[in-house]
Length: 218
Ligand SMILES: Nc1ncnc2c1ncn2[C@@H]1O[C@H](COP(=O)(O)OP(=O)(O)OP(=O)(O)O)[C@@H](O)[C@H]1O
Ligand SMILES: [Mg+2]
Image 1 (tube, rainbow, N blue to C red):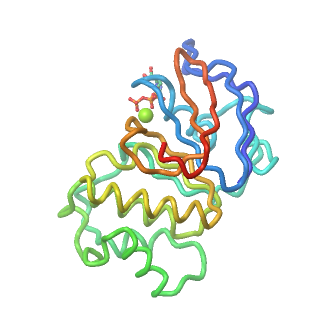
Image 2: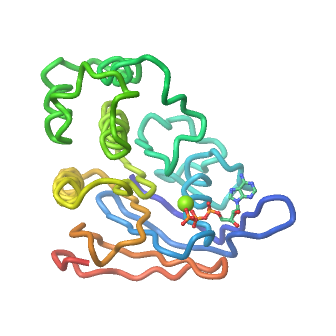
Image 3: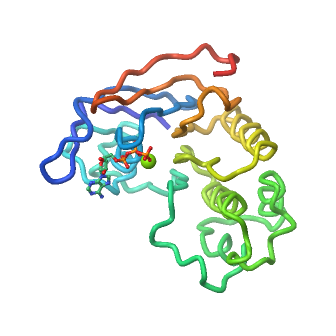
């Protein structure tokens, strides 16, 4: 998915969080967003997702203004925290994933995704028995189930152990190599072996984008 952010200014109430942010992404790019706590990383992706309402002509998804965009199924999103999520609700991993399916998909495809994320054996578990990192991986499978063109992951490896973090980045790198654009918010850019193409750093509301040579472990 192509993304254009053009002079985006956004705030909550009277406080400006993002000031005149501009950058472009091409299909297949892999963007890391970094910045201190409160620098506006989550705010920025919520603007791209239409969750935060922005003024027209500031964000374009495949050349369509986000204020008119209708194809949000093209975007897989794993939020930073699941504030509105009831972790005690009695529902299994399989049920949560099946409830999100919006296309024809074979059982094999679902099992393959669960296997890729290392949670195949958890499919019949109740979600309230899972660890935070396991639940995170369930949400990642859920975000991938409708074959998104863009994947937005807001600090997806918090609470995931080292071995699984490595596996996670391998999976994300291979999805990206297949052509899915990825935006990943992270605090540990040096620890991750993600194959970023660009890094956007947010500081005092301003954003600076840099291209990263591909193949380099950012
Ligand atoms: N819904 C909201 N209403 C009002 N203010 C908000 C809201 N969401 C975020 N903010 C404020 O906007 C600023 C940026 O928050 P944001 O969550 O985007 O930062 P972040 O870079 O994602 O931080 P973190 O690394 O802690 O996740 C913060 O000062 C935060 O308090
Ligand atoms: Mg955040």
